[in-house]
Image (tube, rainbow, N blue to C red):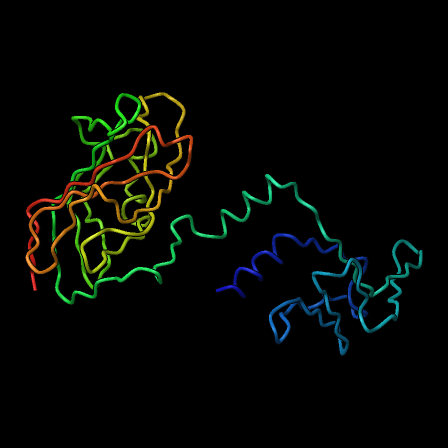
Length: 258
């Protein structure tokens, strides 16, 4: 996976400018080195290595290719010149966020359940407002609802479930593909998921989701895997700008279909 990210970054952060083509008029063939850390350009029998640490690299052949255009002789070099491109910190951050999945999460420190059966539950998600109370006031409306399934420790949101925050939240892709959540052996949800914080009225500017980390919360009432029925899982935000609110995920009518 690290090598894949490296190759993607090399592709984005490198711009190649060819001063000339191969002696036979064809373009150099681009390939990847054996260790996967730089590009190799093959032109005829020669090769040219383009390392991400070099600013200019010439091909192994220095021959020129002469062509005639409108009666004039043109000298074309087979030299390949590469230039590194420097991005601002903001642009580089945006590019990296596109490469690294926003729902990526390290589960290695958690004791993930491995239930072979399939547990199904109805869920509803409600917002907790901490501006009005230190303990948090649970708002009496659902910001998302539907059903979910738990199998081999993985939590999947069933089709037909939906966010109710307007704007981008109406896209089912966020619940189907941007939820990376597992259940621990003691019944807590851990992972990351797309989460819509604010309600968007029709015609208003769209607001992108946040991606909070789901983890064990002392306020939670975990789900029993042996006799699943109900659960109450609290969600907090790490971002200081979003700590005014949180969420409570209620699970009900849970059944073990194994």
